[in-house]
Figure 1 (cartoon, rainbow, N blue to C red):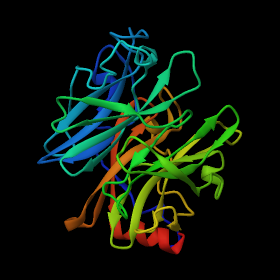
Figure 2 (figure 1 turned 90 degrees about the vertical axis):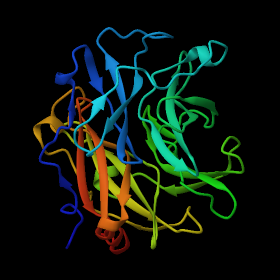
Figure 3 (figure 1 turned 30 degrees about the vertical axis):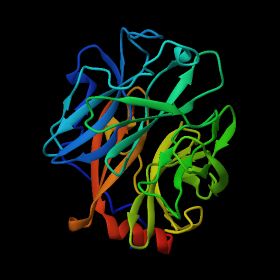
Figure 4 (figure 1 turned 45 degrees about the vertical axis):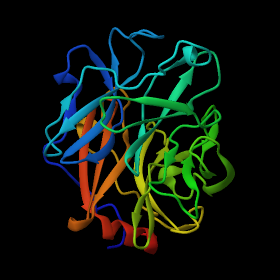
Length: 317
């Protein structure tokens, strides 16, 4: 294997969720997947044609999609995430999309990038659930701009860690950083992890998802952005972080794992975009299940060998 572009295999049943099946839905943003008992759950971001800003019907909302087989999903019409407050500053928050979900102990923690009306944003709002029926907001845990903050699934050396993606847009690169916390609310000790531009497919920005523990390191699925003359393209790759010192990159894919190839990945509300907000491992099958958004139009699935992706990071394929 000379590169990592052949590891992931798209489901022949893609797209699994498409706006054509949901009248009134204008956009479907990128899913955050998690295994919940026997179910596969996706947090899917939805924009309706009739959406307006503010409380009530928002310009972007998160809804729960459930499946018993990981293929056939039932997408709720109920908004799952809210600020749960009309008081300042929460009355300014809107557009709850592109969540990252991490299971820590008995809770599923969710970081939601939220826009702040009239201010430079987004910021990362932390909440949690135990059943994906009830949502509890905790607090905002990033400074602006930060899109894609992702929690590690366990403490490392007695501290919680999260990957951050400050910057991006307005001509600035989006790079990956790391921070730590004693309590999931107060964060510090910020360190740079990986800068955009180490290969052509991430020359403009990169961003993280919740890390997955393997025996060789923390595997993190990342996205990369490149804008050649033909327009902007979003790619998917991976990096491997040290288990005990997670700010150290011990491997990364030099090639991308996936790029927009199929018609519904290349044409939609945001052309040439495949975007991950997370993945999960089925260790007994040596599988990585990656659910991704396609052109803000559809939700898709790709599956690949977990060990092959880790090996590709270590070898720099």
